[in-house]
Every structure is written in structure tokens, then in C-alpha cells.
Amino acid sequence: MGLDGASGSAAETQKLNFEEQPDSREFGCAKTLYISDADKRKHFRLVLRLVHRGGRELGTFHSRLIKVISKPSQKKQSLKNTDREPGGAGRGGAGPPGRAGEGGGFDRTGRAGGTEDQKLSGKYKEPAWVLISSPLTVCISSGSKVSLFNRLRSQTVSTRYLSVEDGAFVASARQWAAFTLHLADEHCSQGDFPPREGYVRYGSLVQLVCTVTGITLPPMIIRKVAKQCALLDVDEPISQLHKCAFQFPGDSPGGVGTYLCLATDKVVQFQASPCPKESNRALLNDSSCWTIIGTESVEFSFSTSLAWTREPVTPVPLISTLELSGGGDVATLELHGENFHAGLKVWFGDVEAETMYRSPRSLVCVVPDIAAFGSDWRWLRTPITVPVSLVRADGLFYPSAFSFTYTPEYSARPGPPGALEPATDADALLESIHHEFTRTNFHLFIQT
Image 1 (cartoon, rainbow, N blue to C red):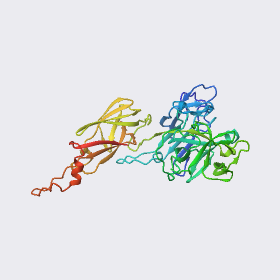
Image 2: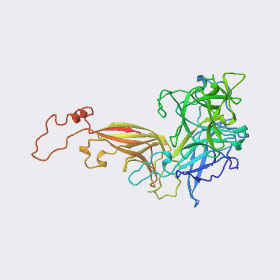
Image 3: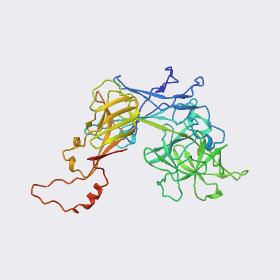
Image 4: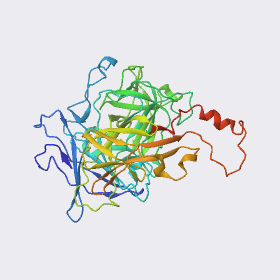
């Protein structure tokens, strides 16, 4: 793993050693990868080159753009400067999560990268490769992904990351986890998150949900930390690389509350003390102060089960949106995304579609006739949903998260010769459904 445009020095590249996890995944971390002070770039990408044990190259994978931050913002944040303000890894820290002097995280997931496997007529989803990078906004919004780490006395060797192992929250010295940060509601049950847009402010009730396991911590109040004190009256938006504390709600001795804390490799509660000089502050210990950073992941999925190729699997085509045109007997589907090329074909389930290449960001295909999916298509009364995928000319299979649904219009199956015609009200329910559709044979719908 290295940085784009790297010279190949030890500071800019690092060999990864993958370790098998209990859930059959493999994890590798470029912990000593960093950006030197002499490198004046403001943005970079992580670059991962994977090679088989026999020496054949699997491919080169890139993260999204990462912004270099020399130090966290000290100015008071407001909603006026939340948009397009750059955030990212610390100067000297290329990756998870903005650690100064430490490097990028990379996760190989053995079963569809923590997502549900998609099976398709003998084709299957093989390991997904995930690169982690930091977003380009300075403030953190509800529903975004974050990581948390604790560093005692500013010593790099003492860094611990909030993670999940064996169904429990732990403080890991090596592996970190991404959490979805939700604005919580004290009137809602745990795990129920009503849609709440906007930036998270200090003093808000929030809940952390592990993006891989779905395990959550109880709702907590997020507090800003300054000089090892929790500030109880600050309500400004939360910024990247800020130090914060998580207070468990409820009455406690002294009225300053208990806070999320680490004890070696365990996560515990710490009872804060009132500040003798300022009533709007609570005294914490080092282990209760966390640094927060936004994270993102780029997932690459492919299968070589039906392919016979010695070419790299990259660049991996990624579908972002689908756009349907037409309907009835003739319909076309435009795929928008990236890394498209003329050697790709669109497949609906196990049916290949006539595909036309427009640009690296656009493919157009003709939607296959419903008859391709069964001989009884004329009498179908339930929708048919098939996955949409891409297949390279050499048979390399790229699954996607998108699917396509054929929704039939009702028509009665003809009876045997001499049979009586059904009464006009024999199937009133289906007849009412019939009038909701157009006169064409099928409606075509897209769903993700």
C-alpha cells in the first residue's frame, strides 16, 4: 500500500500482512504509512496493489480523495463554514482515521464485504476489497460514518481504537471500526433512528452503531473536550479530529455524569468529577477523551469463478445510478457510474443484454424481453426481480447492488376449448389492479 504519486520510499509504501479474523475475513493495516512534512500536497489517494502468491497481479485499487489536515481546526464552527470545508487525515497520517504518523486501513472481507451475498446462476460474489478514506467536510452530520481513537499523553504507541470483537466493544491497539453516528431521540426505543438531517452538535444525544456487526452503544450525550475537561454548555457543530467525550445520560453523584472510557483493552464507564472553579465543566481522565474522524469505504466486488484471465481485475466498474427510458415492448436502461469500457456487457440475472458503450461513465443497454425468464411469462401475476451486473469480455463478473423488476399487467389464462367464460366479477381484485397499470404488457421498474 502507498500513496498516489509516491516515489516508492519506505515512508510512502508499506507491505501489508493479512491476518485472518474470527468471521473469516482477513485484515491488513499499513500502520506506519505517513506523509512527510516535506510533502506539500493538500490531497492524496491511498493506492493498494494486490499480487497473488505466484506473482500474478490481481489489480491496483484506489481510495477516494483524502484531504491532508496538519492539525484540527481551533476556530469555533458554525453552519456557515460546514459545507465544502476540507477534512481528512492528519499531516503525517495517511489513513485510518487521521492518525498522525500512522497509515491506511484496508479490509479484505471473505463474504461480500459485510453485505449480503448475491447469487446469480452459478456466479457468486467473491471477496470484496475495501479501502478506507476520510471525507472532505469539516463538520460531521447525522448518519455519517466515524471512527474514534484514544491516545494517552499524545504518545503514538499508546493509541487505542474503539472497535468491536466477539460481540463486545473493545479498545484495540491494531484494528479500528467504523460507526454510524445517529442523532438519537430519548423518546425512541434503542436501535430506532428516525430520519434526522443536519450536523451533529455538542450536547446532542447520539448513538454509535457498528457498520459491520450492527451492535450499538446506549444513547450518549456528546461533549466537547478542552484541557481534559468536558464542556457542558457548548452546542457548536462537531468537527473532524476534535477531542470529545461521551456522557451516559441520567443522574449521577455530583451531577456531572459518567463517561465512555477505556481501561487497557476494555471499554468501561468513568465517573467524572465537578470542576472546582467552573460549574459548566466536568473533570475527565485521559482515557475518557476520544478523537473523532469521519470515514468512508470503497468496496470492490468481483468474481473470477467463470473467468479464465491473467489480466488484472482493475479498474473495477462501479454503478451509481440507473435511468430507464421507454417501456412495453422496447425499453432501454442507462447505467451511470465509473470505470466503464467497451468490453463490458450488462446482464439481467443470467440473461445478457445488448449493450452500447457511451463513455467511461455511461453504458446503455436494451432491457431483455420478459420471455427470456420463463415460458409462462404471459400469465404471471407476481413481479420478477433480477440482479443487474456487469461481465467483462473474458468472463470476469462484477456484481452490483442494483436489481431490475418486471411488473406484469393482469391477463386471464385462456381455458380449455368449450369451457364457460368466467363471470365478469370472478376476479374483482385482480381486475382492479389491472386498471392501475397501462395497456402495455409490462411495467418496468428499477429498484436498488
